[in-house]
Amino acid sequence: MCKVIQASDNNWMCERCNKQYDHCCRRYIYSLTMVDDTSCTWATSFNDQAELMLGGVTANEMNQYLENGDTQKFEEIFQEALFTDWIFKCKVKNEMVNDEQRIKTTIYGMQKVDFVEESKNLLKAIAGF
Image (cartoon, rainbow, N blue to C red; front, side):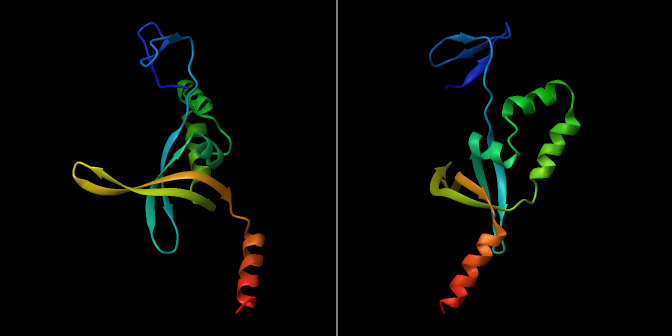
């Protein structure tokens, strides 16, 4: 899998291996804001996690909605993902960008919140005191 650019003849070309392809497989690089009771932070989610968050809709399907002019369906998919509850596994690191230190957060795993299971865990923790 490699990054490709669209050539003038509607083929896709890989600059690394210098090969041309008839089609490409689009993948997500998805920036989002994560919020909890204490603060919020920007994070990056890549293809697998973004598909999970967007209800299993692939980047190719999203591109088809745009190409077909179905912006309503495109917007609906994002609207359904807003303000949903997840448990994230993140990698956080400091990076230097233009002599400025920034914190970069990348999501590498996520799952929907199971409120019943979380409640049971909290009750066990409370009972342990």
